[in-house]
Amino acid sequence: IDTANGMVEADRATIADLRVGSLAMRGHDVLISDGLGETNLLGMNFLSELESWRVEGSSMILVPRQHSH
Image 1 (cartoon, helix red, strand yellow):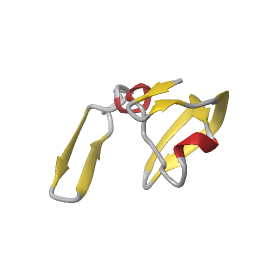
Image 2 (cartoon, rainbow, N blue to C red):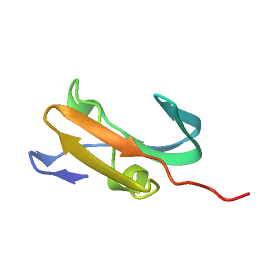
Image 3 (tube, rainbow, N blue to C red):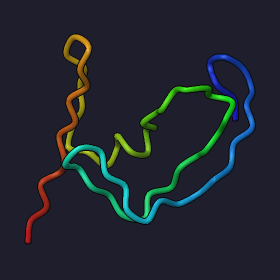
């Protein structure tokens, strides 16, 4: 994949149950790469599933979508 720091090799995978704090997603596609070092990333495919997200100071605020039943 082409990153801001150049090309890195990555593998595609699907995570059956992904949890970030109290937020949960099922069957989420991800890329796995040692070329990113110790960095963990939330990609736009993850963020686009949210109602909204924002950064306040050094915190990222994730707002899940409200699903009607």
